[in-house]
Length: 146
Image 1 (spheres, one colour):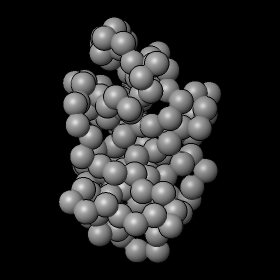
Image 2: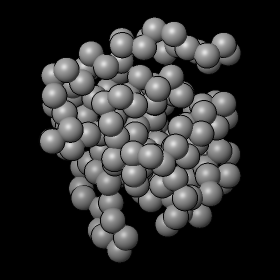
Image 3: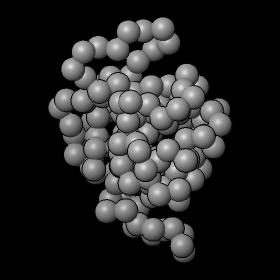
Image 4: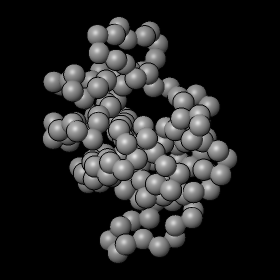
């Protein structure tokens, strides 16, 4: 899947998203599903869905390098709120949006704190990289992330 990070197309995704009961691969950092964790992951990355309770995650944010939020449908706005909560908790690392995303959402996702976006091959075009600069007006109190 193509990855946009900090408004740039990334060739290699260093992270491996592990599935339940799967053995982690050697020599590649692993992203663990939040629902399978009871303590901070050794790989320093977590994936969650919009339905997960992220309260335990908020106490680990200083130990994590990457958090991925899965959007099950483009109309599910809970991921936007989760991103704001995670950033307010002090998370400074990569915050990745995955799943059903629309080009029109990219600038709004970025304004909520996302700095990485995983899109399907069908979703990604070169024009998608220009989507971040199409919205120049933000609500008061909402930071503009450049």
